[in-house]
Image (cartoon, rainbow, N blue to C red; front, side):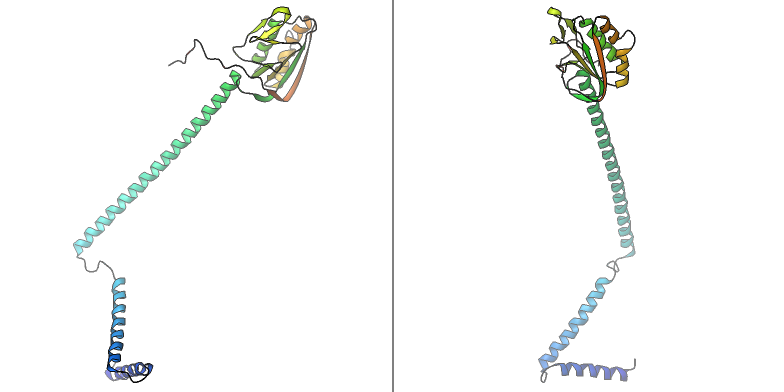
Length: 248
C-alpha cells in the first residue's frame, strides 16, 4: 500500500485513541497508551512463536537423533503392550483352568459324598414295601434285594427312613427274628427307598425269581411304587479306610 494511503489511516487511528480518552491527555497518558500497544504486539508475537514448531532451531543431526529416540520408545511401548496383552490372556486362561478344576473337584466331591451316604439326596426312584406277617423274611432276603437294586443302578438306598445303605453296609439276623443293618435294628414292615431310574428299579424287583417272588414264597407280599420325587435323608456314618491307601 502507498505511503500517502497509510498515513491518513494512522492519523485516524490516533485520533480515535485521543477521543476515547476523557479530557486532554497528558504526556504520561500517551506513554501509557504506547506501552499498551507495544505489550499487545509482544503478546501476539509470543503466541505466534509458541504455536511454531518447538524444534525449528535444532540442527538436522539433532532432529534425526530425536526421531530415532522417539521411534525406539514407540517400539518399546508397542512390545510392552503386546507382552501385557499376552500376560492378560495367560492369566485369564489360568483363571478359567483353575475355575474348571474347582468345578470338577466339586462335582467329584459331591459324587463321592452321595456314594458314601454322607449327604441327603433327592430324585426319581421307587418305594418298596415288604410285608412280612410271619416274620420269615430275614437278612439274606433283604441283602439280595439291596444287591438287585444296586445292579439296577440305584444311586442311594435307605431302609425304613433311618438307615443309609452304602458299600460298607452289612445286614445280619438278630435275636427274636429281627434284622439289623450296620448294627441298627429295622422293624417290619421293611420299607426300602432307592433313587435311580424308576422303571429299571421296578423291574429289578418284580422280575421272575426276584425279590417279589422270594418274599411271596415266604408268605409275605411286596408292593412297588414309582415316584419322580423321592428324598433319601438318612446319613451313613463317615468311616476312614483302615487298610487301603491312595496309590502313588
